Length: 68
Image (cartoon, rainbow, N blue to C red; front, side, top):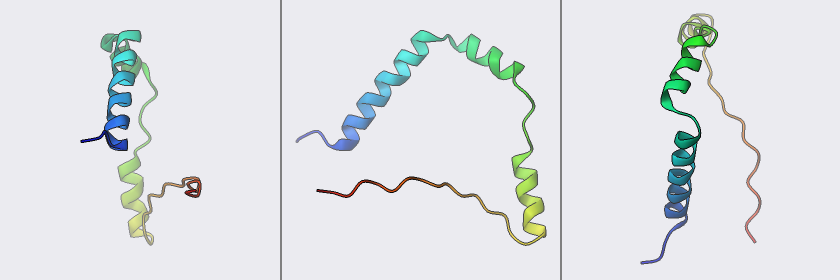
């Protein structure tokens, strides 16, 4: 069975995550998270928007290149 594109992406991402973990210890990441600014209340704002009409979450992506 040949390797699929998803297999390649998975392998690449596993390597990327391992490299990130090696570059910065989890304790440092946790310390940065604790020192970060407070969250902006995303869920609460979305709920308020639904009472005024509707709440919307959108993700805008570039168009994928055409297949050749």
